[in-house]
Image (cartoon, rainbow, N blue to C red):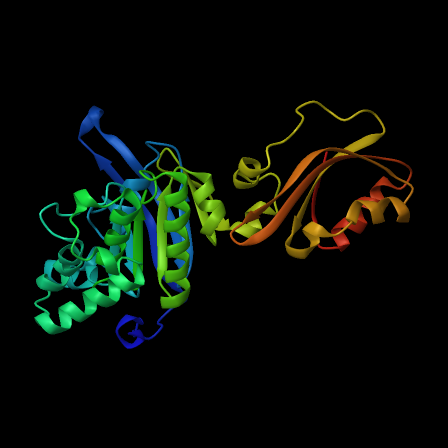
Length: 340
């Protein structure tokens, strides 16, 4: 089975998806809706990259520009070494075979069984029936639906429908999987199961996954990198670990909201201390009080698992003769410390 499922294209670049200056509008004149404004985006090969934003931020338009279901008004889109925006119709159809896509509402054909839905893109490719049946069997096994091959969409749960959608998207052995709000129609248990499956496929197949979502919980569970989209503009992007380590970033503040809006008392400072990995479980503040003449008052904080990594943030008040020395010591421990 592995021989059929592994992506065999040689690596051409560390970047799998690159958008440069992509803009897209709908309508004309004063009625035009500007969905994307000069969007730059880079997705590394093998990453799970999340694009997060509120409804109407331009997320769906962005992801549809990647496979040119929507053609940008300007800018370039490159996927796996091909500049999609320069391809003719025949070349574009061939390039899309390397880009799978799954949807919020599954988009299954109601008159076809699960196996027949998965087989559909292979029929379009005119794959011979014995090979097609073997491939469908492999894909259904991969997503845990071997026993549902003969079931119709109306007989499947939401989670099972999305698994069929994932198997169908993988039928042509893509190197990229686009996920358009793929868990938004699912309950929490099915959401976790689908995200776990996507993470497994990413690791097992080396699959690059670009997903859009309005749910920070999706980002927290599986993303390596993230971009935040607001009113068609990317306002922040980067590795999850880097953004979380910066208490002033939008992503960090989404997971760890600032506790207080007022100012610290005279003679004291407030500090947001971010802990990553093993340091999240170390007795850093206890050791700090022992080492320096400083009082530490914990204002709030939490520890979470984000992108598979333990991340903690404490917001504290520091006061004492050696406050500055204590802050520098924390930074020497490779902790991110923001002071005010």
